[in-house]
Image (cartoon, rainbow, N blue to C red; front, side, top):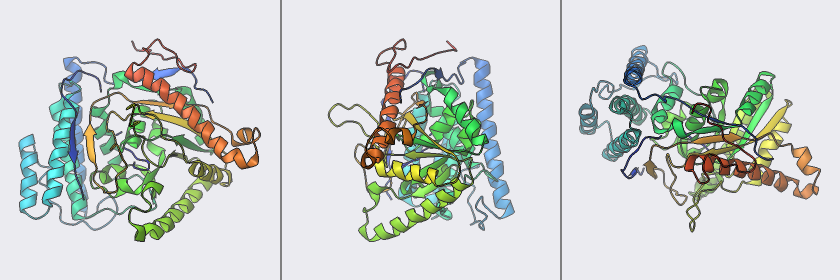
Amino acid sequence: MSSTLPLPFFGGTCTKAAFSFSLKSSSPLVPFQRLHLFGSTSRTTTRIRSSLFHSLKAKATAELVQDKESGVVATGKPVVEHSRTFVEARSEQELLSGLRKEVDAGRLPPNVAAGMEEVYQNYRNAVFQSGDAAAVGVVLSNMTVAFDHWLLDVEDPFVFEPYHKALREPFDYYMFGQNYIRPLIDFRNSYVGNLSLFYEIEEKLKQGHNVVLISNHQTEADPIIISLLLEKTNPHIAENMIFVAGDRVITDPLCKPFSMGRNLLCVYSKKHMYDIPELAEMKRKANTRSLKEMALLLRGGSKIVWIAASGGRDRPDPFTEEWYPALFDSSSVDNMRRLIEHSGTPGHVYPLALLCYDIMPPPRQVEKEIGEKRIITFHGAGLSIAPQISFPEIAAACEESEAKDAYSQALYKSVSEQYNVLKSAIHGKQGLEASTAGVSLSQPWN
């Protein structure tokens, strides 16, 4: 998210360059757990996967038909008459020719159609980088559903409330996002660090406690990528995590259907607060409403909230081209801490590191306009969590006036250490036998 989301939002070999499109409108712990999903490349596995994706497309199509026949969409609003051009497509040619048909019928603006076609080409080439024999069917299945929902939002734009609960029926937007981003992740080169701590968090949630994950942020697909990395081991966390999301992922037409499948607390990022000065006051009031929604949620307990403490996505160093977590905003961290403390429910703050920028790196500079240039590739991803950090312990070691900054710095230091381990593993900076900051890497399925 440009303030959070994500959205996961690889392997194989490919000699092609990445494709892009632009549409305008404490210390780490052991062990690391390596993900091993879809490891087999046998013909049997390929047939099973191909059948699975085609059945998912059929299920999605059936759900859409049911939506239209019942006269409501997932929001309960009356349905605008919806074209079936894309859901009935059976080939790439039919899907792309459908764009021209919708433009000619006046249902789709030409610039949006052009952007959708660029997305198709970009996504297709990224999925093909995986070397998956079922890539053709996977791309057609996922892009058919994506096209249909982009068109649906043009016809009847969805409006997000300050607290948006993931839409799971009658159409399952959560699984739509999972199925769309999954083919972009090289699970053979992906890692989850300190998996035992995620099980610890699950137990705390069962006890009615709240958990806040203070994290860095890299791509629009972060929420989906996080869910994909946890869906096999910790499905409750994967499906119930609440993401503090910037306004860009709930207004960009290419992001909205994916955002609809996540639990979101919608806020306006500080980085974009004054993009349009006359809207700044409205944005501040909206953020106040979102904070009140968050306070109410935390009072109920058993909530897990993810927040990008920097207020935006990480960017590479302009001189070294190295990627590092962006510095945290101590005020944002302190706001979350105080919300937890005043909820009347036990709460815990954990530092979380995420590395996935290769999949969908953000623009080098923060942009004001919606519809950024996007690059998509097939690549590994990593997620690592460190032990919770106690504010009273940090505050006891410094002056009261310094406690807020010291706490933010402690969380940032932990995230950075975890991030460096992920980088060493995924990018092979020091080899798989290396140990960084006392963290070793395990590959139990090799």
